[in-house]
Length: 136
Image 1 (cartoon, helix red, strand yellow):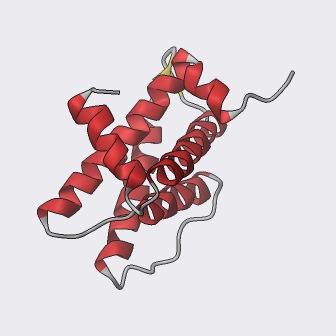
Image 2: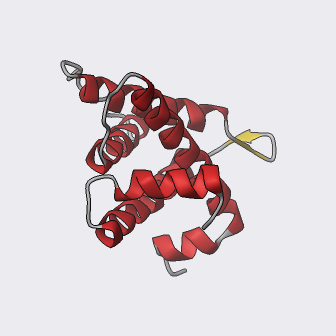
């Protein structure tokens, strides 16, 4: 069976729901950062996704929380791991591999939106429009 690309996953209703849940966590954490005047960039969101992936694969992140943005990355990664822990499919825990595929698809979306926007918050600004304004 051919492995699905991230674009295919975005079109799959099951993965689309997972991706929306992941993006909602990232957006919520971005809003929390704005409330304390912390400017988060797409690279911070990507780092959080990568740290969550590492944790789910058995390699928890090293404590690098010396700066506010590093603290944000660790907090967001923890929230993503907690999201995975509560997700269920037919009354069974969601497989880590399935959640990791969704995280990777979100990371691909992040890269695409950042490139399309041409600035360091292209993806995070897209999430604001996508989630809050529902214009896209």
